[in-house]
Image (cartoon, rainbow, N blue to C red; front, side):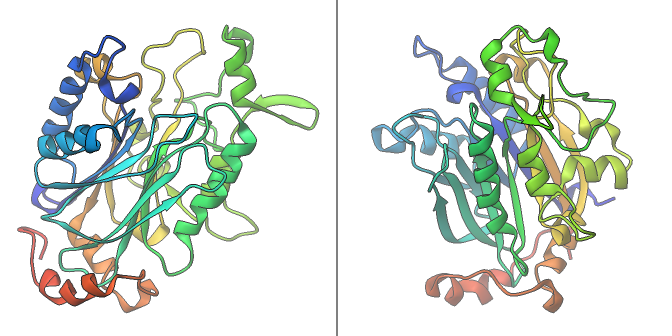
Length: 330
């Protein structure tokens, strides 16, 4: 196990409507910031940054200020959804080099900055996704798009709300018993037809994390890795919904995924649930912790593959940035 000073913390969280209630109250947002302050993630992958693009993105910058040494990236809201994704990077650990947005045929565009970690020579791609809540076919398209972040030679960590189910069954989170789900529209949104029967939609997860023809997956589901390789069974705990009772039992629909070489640096994965989390959002945050020293080695290895493209300006600063160290990670 790594010491606390050898940690690289990545947290994904869908904060319901950005923590702002219909009456304008930001009490839930303040609670969420208290939760984040206690965890101090180096990378925050956010979903439902509702209307955060307004007023010069003031809420985005307020959140960055509350987080501390973080630089924010915000994807574009769409005409039908005011809930964009975003990413916050701790610039004392991560130097941003690029920012991409993937939006074609996606319900919510993917926010995708790229960064160099201190002491690393290869870039790490980071993505926040929020798959379509109402259409399995759109979710499959979105998952296909996300696989472009896991091409050979790329290193990536992505996280978000899958609005669907893991394709591997486990006893901690059985799939919904649809006979007990009162919300009829939810049934339509979360099921597909296979072999003439309605079943729970696991297609997006299978695209992202499925093994095919003996080949490894594009991404490793870090909860599954933590449970099977690190003996952390609670990593498979369900996530949403913490509030709704008419959609069946809680399910593990919030995922943090990584390319295989990055997944091997994981030390723990935790679904964070406490009173403040339950009051702040219907989704709990999912926290993936990596060994910083192991991750830095992976991102400095000649065998790790081709470098992610960097802007010329970022490339010019790479040598100075790589000379920094994190205490306990040498």
